[in-house]
Amino acid sequence: MLTITTPTDREIVMSRDFDAPRSLLFDALTNLALLKRWFGLFGGWALSVCEIDLRVGGPFHFVWRNAEGASMGIRGVYREIVVPERIVHTEVFDGYPSEAITTTVLIEHAGRTTLTSTILYESREIRDAVLKSGMERGVKASYENLDRLLQSLQQNGG
Picture 1 (cartoon, rainbow, N blue to C red):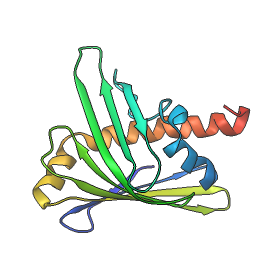
Picture 2 (cartoon, rainbow, N blue to C red):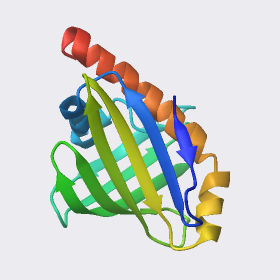
Picture 3 (cartoon, rainbow, N blue to C red):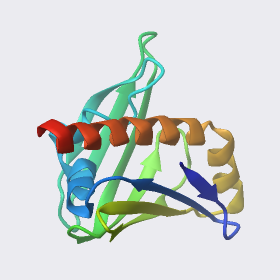
């Protein structure tokens, strides 16, 4: 189950448990072939651009498109990568005026992994706009896709 909290006036914290080892979850978050199978794929949206340069200072860029031709994109730069436990990156969504900093931490307990992402925005107003944007629905759907992918990878290797 996805948990979303707002511990400060500029942060959103999202957390979810996955029945998978941390190394597999880290791979699903950073491997292009795996990302294309789960990230942001819901409600008619498809990932049309998926680019990652997984190194400190390396950029990433994702663009989703739907059947009506609408698009939505995000880009950022990796600031810290600790395989398989932590990723820190900047992110800018199309249409939002500022950059956020996302810290994703993976903690494994007995073969299950808790993924926690903390997103720090420049202001309360931007954080609140993101909360009102339907972000929760998209994250929940993506994480459900991710969970199915992780189960498939563990059961039949892909």
